[in-house]
Image (tube, rainbow, N blue to C red; front, side, top):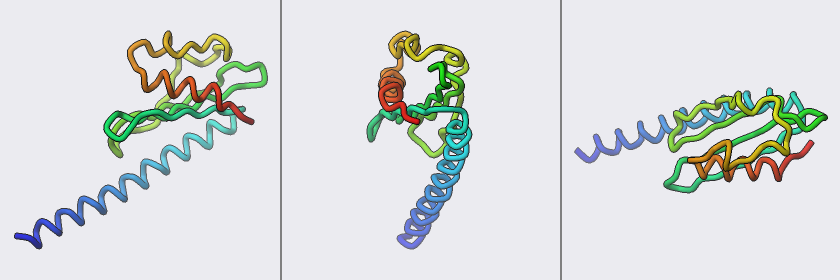
Length: 119
């Protein structure tokens, strides 16, 4: 019985490692494409028991949003997604509490992304 539990734990751990690596590769691929489009700001929020949010925004030379990347969730099944409603907005028009009225994690991540904008 103990060896069966150990086997299940090892299989679960190895699955977590494999799926986590796959998730990181998907995010890195999407992030690389985003970085090719302009200056990028990245924000992250969340905690140990709250869904984590990673939000990246690419800006062109006129400070307009050209692309976005949002990844949120608690598990390795979270996938990168785009926020199409932000495309074309100027940096000054991005109001996190208006864009994400019921999602404090996304609000915080967007605030950080706007502060951390770099070339």
